[in-house]
Length: 156
Image 1 (cartoon, rainbow, N blue to C red):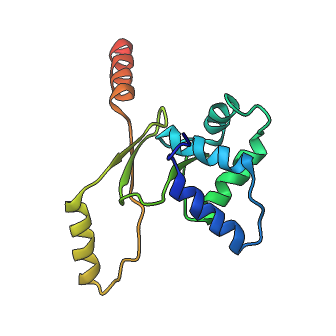
Image 2 (cartoon, rainbow, N blue to C red):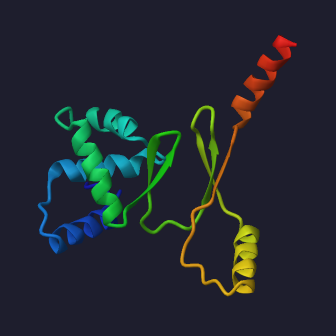
Image 3 (cartoon, helix red, strand yellow):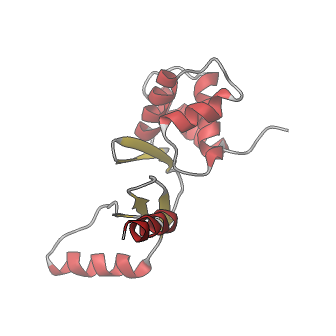
């Protein structure tokens, strides 16, 4: 039985490729499926590791180009922090924001209707029409904050 993972995304990609006169390839589809199955924000290196478990013939450049293509097709979103790009599936996903740990790079997604309401209220107050936004809060995750406090206590 064929996998239903990414069926709609594969259709979106196929339509994008046709519109732009690009070729459909088994490599791109394998990368898209691995990307969707990852279930988290991934770097090019992380996705390369995942893809190579099944397709050793796929290289870093192909991963990078495919992720760029997925972004252009509206299937992926890129988040860059600390010089490293991470990608997440975008198609048919609800809006969410991010907490990013500046120490380990872990990314935590969150939704806040209250923050969304406040943004809308502020925008209306200044006559601004919001067409989209990306909200990233930088800090330290629980694990890194705990390590930091233990290290600080040892120095005292």
